[in-house]
Length: 344
Image (tube, rainbow, N blue to C red; front, side):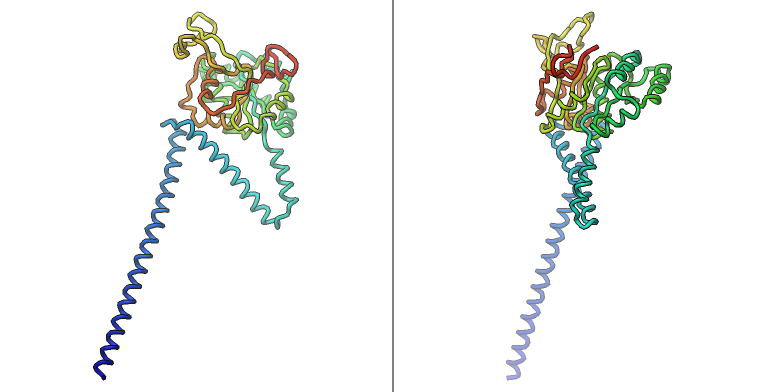
């Protein structure tokens, strides 16, 4: 009896020990599996962060190119991130105020006032002070009125100019003095002012503008063009529902291949045997939506420029998913009915 009892107790003890060992082993395997999965997720997350940072770093320094689709995805992603950040900020404020709806409405009104409709860059050069003074007298507000235009109508206007090839000479000093007096310039310090570099200047303007102002549209105008700002604002506002638009007086024409010709294009051979330009907006005035300005900023180092800035801009958008708007009101040949501009 004692022998059988001792055997049963020993068998029971052995079974219990084995159960504890099995449970311990199972727990260890479960823990190790959980740690492995967590580690993989953390590593994947770290890798994604690294890749995004590396992509931003490389594209910012011009070391590599990215596809058009990837660029547009980045633009969309960044826009969503901005909206999410704004919503999170608004939620935090609402929480502190006890979710008072009036507070949210007041903040929404303030935000809507701060939102810019357009940044307009008037391309000018050192010898065109008379043109600038004429523009200021005719259609561009000055002083406090310029600031009021930004606050009330959401339109920023600046003359755009580069630097002299002889940095710091009398031309540079004259522009600096005029800028201090009028406070209505974008001075592109990294751009050398030259008629042959107008395309690069236009590209630099869009890069500068999108990095300094958050607007729905960015427009380029020549300094010999007179503009009806209210009409321009109305036209642009009518396209707010379209995310990627290129608006202007669309045209095409002959590509000139002889150096003595006025509109000579050194790379004429790229435009085919017919030597005809693709459709593009006239350089007198054209506008692009925010996504396209961001596209230019991201890809500044790989966007090709041609002899003329309007052709160059058209080439940047020709292969993108962009809505080309042939806007007759942007044709500045005369003050026709409904026109927003005229050439001096």
